Length: 627
Image (cartoon, rainbow, N blue to C red; front, side):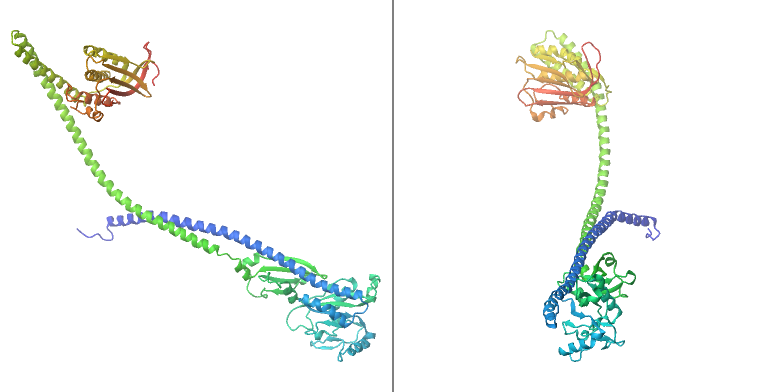
């Protein structure tokens, strides 16, 4: 024998079959894993969308609240200027002390204000005298100033009129602005003129404050005050007394609106869009400068804008979520879903893998047991065939032997009859022995007849045709009537009142079966004891039932099925070969029916025969429809 090499076709086939089995068993696990991943992905996507909507809703609410709060804060700061204007309307001349006492509480409550100032209108003809008045108040080096091209504060050049800062609170940090001519620059002068014409609050363009040391933009808000408020608007310029000025550092103004930290997680850009083509960013709160990292897709999607008017200018506030906001609202649910999905998928896949392995082991055991059972079944079938052949051979031998024995027994019986006739003068003892010989011979003939019938039931051709059971029962009862009358037993016959019942079977065999059962009933009923045998034929669905009831001593319930075995009798003292009921069962079974006995062992017995229903025949002989 040579070793199987790599090219051995049997080995290759086994390897291929093994891999195919592994792949087939692994398919459920792969399917579970795929389904688990898909379901986890779907749940993750769904929860992600729900979480995104929730975050977006929370951001929009927070941004809207912030925009409203910022607008309220700016409006509240602007009302400070209106209040100071009311002071100048109420008092003809407000001195420096009165101004300070009035504005200092306002500054403490509004921390977004850099300075509050009073700016009088000073014609050039009154400049020197006015400067002397200020110096007389203790400001010995006071001059009306302006900013040089180098950024230094220098005495203002001569012009028709001046708008110097006369009153200033707080002084600390704002000293450079004291005496500064606000109208010395074009942007500030445009705001002054607009405020003087309208009489309303007017804000300047974003400017760099003279007191600014950082990089913030500043904002100047003017409110014009007049000497004679009753004059027509067209002559306001002539009656102009000066301006109440609010100085704001825009970063401080926005920070004042965030004083409670509620909106610290929002990044905000405040822009001046009064001239859309020249929009200017005023404040960046938490937003990187241009040129930094590109905003994420989430930040680009979560953007909230609001535009509002502020002292004659238009501002736009744009808010986006800060990284802290996104971290605070980023749920750990996604990680939990992924972990849970993978865990459940792994557990289910593991269970399925264990079940697949166990199933494979069970299949191998079943295959082995199936092969063993198949082998046993084949051996059993072979044994059954051999037994059937032996039974057939035994029955054929039995039939042949009984047939061969009938001839000598018939000769013996005839010889006994002839001998008895010649012994007319024989003694009583001789006649008694002759009677015993005749009786024994008759029993042997009867036994041989029963054996022939029993042997023939395995080979005899049985017909299947409609048999009128009422008629067959009536014939059997008439045939056994002499025996019944001899024992003074009444035999009662009752058929279905709707007609005589027809069953499928062999007429001769049905007659033989019924005769045997009725004869047994008569045989077991004691003579002269008011014996009754009742025979009934009824239809029950698709069968015909024949019951034969007697009131004899009954049969032990333990023997009800044994009496159908060959050579078994209900009692030892009963005459017969013990083959009658066995022959009855074989015949009834061969015709597709069944037979059994019922008895409580005390009050008689009842034999029941059921045969397939063929049709009903009425008393006129006309066939009716089959059941």
